[in-house]
Length: 366
Image (tube, rainbow, N blue to C red; front, side, top):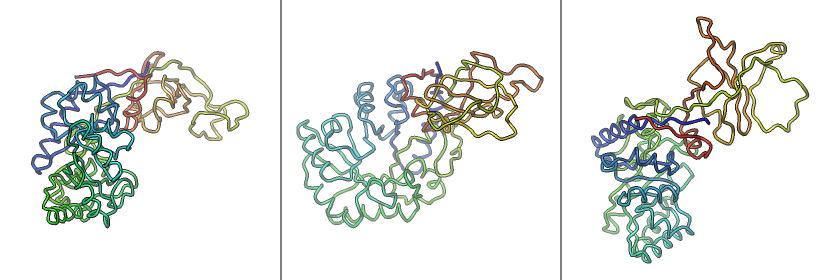
């Protein structure tokens, strides 16, 4: 079975380095664990006490994952990192200490759920800054806050924004400055302290170093940089973080010399995805390896072969084919054999999908 290798010590080192970096800028942060898919073994290996104590909280967008977090570490501070559905208000209050919100009706439901559970639920109000995903319209923010402020069992601990996720709107200094201005307006008008300005994510980390983040921005929500060592801002390695933290291995289940061009009439009823071939490939052959993953497991476009000499041929629901060329090393020896494995660097999205797949084994490396 294909398997994903997870280098846990490298990931923990990334988290330590990000913590040290953000501490220098007086910024707290939440570790976003979406990529874990709530895997308890993964959580136990990464979220050791030393790591947990360095974080403001641990966040996820799935209630099942937060439930698993609480089952592993009952006292861990959790944050639900997307606006919750009203129907799940009871579960959100039960498993999330903090949630991001942009709907008054939902916050009302959270207030009722918190009252039933004898809790005060903390929320961060999300403000629309141009990404057109979640967020309260800026013109309505003051009225919105006033209504929320009157609810029992709800404590507004911060203002936040989401940038760079859907359309890729960059978190510029001017946009982030708007968050700080709204904080000041609310504090002045209602004499109520807002502790957190949650305007940062992995995409914002390079801007912090450049001095392009207002100093009042004091909370980041980070996943990709911690687990992959890169920032979506430029898709480059950030600081000296380790970028080789996950390896995906797919077993060769067939290896034969075959034609490059299919033989027969091709219609549009196929369920697979294939690479193009050239007209002059008609009579040529090459070594093709079938490996044991498919579209149900991961999108091949999110995988980068470590061996740069191999090429994608095609994929179906549960098998994928790669072109191995002559299948020879530089000194003329056979390069791959049946039951060998091809190794890939998976992207953030690939890793998340592989961790969701029940057909992929997990191997942990310390």
